[in-house]
Length: 333
Ligand SMILES: Nc1nc2c(ncn2[C@@H]2O[C@H](COP(=O)(O)OP(=O)(O)OP(=O)(O)O)[C@@H](O)[C@H]2O)c(=O)[nH]1
Ligand SMILES: [Mg+2]
Image 1 (tube, rainbow, N blue to C red):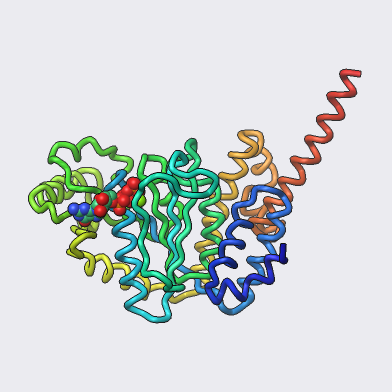
Image 2 (spheres, helix red, strand yellow; image 1 turned 45 degrees about the horizontal axis):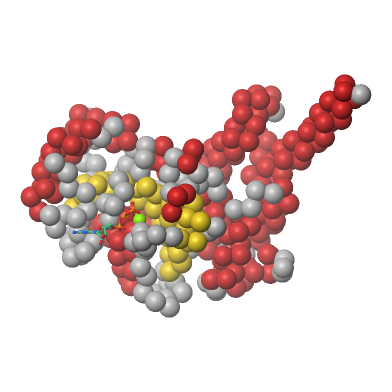
């Protein structure tokens, strides 16, 4: 196995095997991988080639047309600018994924064949974490440097919306046309999260129209004073309304000029996810430990970032487990 650092030039050239191999380092739970990630990220950051991609979250009800729409938008985004490159990370419910390969007949994002400016990857979600995988954010930290736009597709089941809000620069919630009263059943908590709503399948004109008005009305109740939350009406099949979404995205993309601010915003997310990781791995005891050490940010700063801090915690856990084992066997002797 080559040193992953050697794969970086090929990853910048968008060679798929190199990107896939690097991603596997970012999905690897073993302590040694934390060290590799640290070195990879340091190399990417100092390369002067980081693309500082924006993260877009697309979530929504199963079958609303997320993959179809994401595929259409992705193709348009790269058609619009020959230098642009884009990755899609689709988080699939675990039942659909076996040993990393996709089973079943779920519609996949379809890209123009052979265009290396588009990269697709799927991940199995952790059931207990909602729609997102334990390593989604970890992989995004890598893709940030390699692509201009990174789209995360998740199945909306409540928790995933909350996670995606912590992760993405913009969150889109996809709905399909509903009967007017169904919309009232959407949980208010979920309605608070998205930056934009998309009523896809608006080729079903009447139902889409009703849904639009019902959504507008409930947003006025749930998010008063925010009466301009964008609601797009699209059809991923006919192309209707896609240009409006594209214009919105391009506008947002063009506002992103300050590299230092983008890096700082990624760092804030790293702090959030580091704390979450400690909680997942070590529970409440872990959180107590973090606060005794001055908090996640403090520990990360001392350890040279997210991966250094992860490595320090994993080492400490290994050591204390060994100590615990020997104490217990002493007691039993
Ligand atoms: N009529 C109509 N059908 C659509 C539209 N967009 C997608 N579909 C169809 O809806 C079905 C589901 O589309 P997907 O793109 O797989 O939906 P999804 O939200 O990614 O589904 P999951 O990932 O399984 O939750 C497919 O048969 C699509 O062809 C649309 O705008 N109009
Ligand atoms: Mg899908």
